[in-house]
Image (tube, one colour):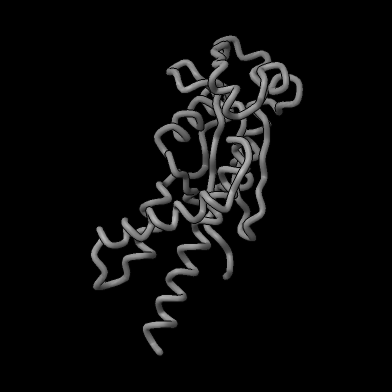
Length: 184
């Protein structure tokens, strides 16, 4: 299949405006996943915490504080790994906000990469010349249901990135199958 695009996901303390990132994961070109907890320790404004969000991701504030990496370390690692790329998210508004919040407490600059919407990438793959965009969107929604059905577990950044990798592979496979059946 070759090198895969990079997919990114964050988990956060809540969905409120005062939320902050507590976990980040991204995929490597081979589809493997790198994931890190992000410690709020020492960041005075990172106090927001949602019990409802904790039930979804299964991470306690104490666990994130004790086992998370510093925001500075995570920012450096993200830039080392992702510099110059467009990374894809299924919710770039939220993930972009948490990325901005993460880098706002790190005084070493901003992200050296951009976030794009995975749907834009996948619909472009599903809509070669002559295929209507609406048809590609419908096919993508069907493939999302398949990809979601193949995954299980808690709502964690690494598992969410695994879902995005599965979805991308399904789209590529679908295109390959379509070309194979069209030439028979």
